Length: 124
Image (tube, rainbow, N blue to C red; front, side, top):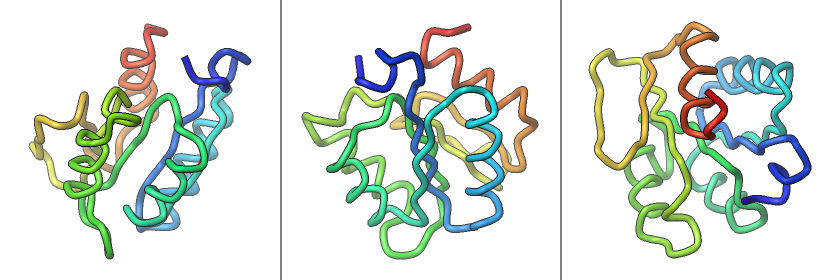
């Protein structure tokens, strides 16, 4: 269990190159009691993961530098991160990838995103 979850505030990392999506989702999650860190692409996310492993990560698919598919591949191939629950957040309906634990279509209704998070964190 991550230290943030032990303290009662699960840590979620949001990785999305669209600043408005990233910030809106971050505010929603903070309003629901989560500690949130933000990254604008896969490269920033990898640096953030080295500093603090979150309890869950939400990843956009299409991003510059390191895209969502490459990021999740690196996460799944890392002994330190392979256990990390991951939600695919895509603007393309029906997008699926077996490396992710769940997926939501953007713009996702708040209840859909929060439901997926709660299910993966065992809070449902």
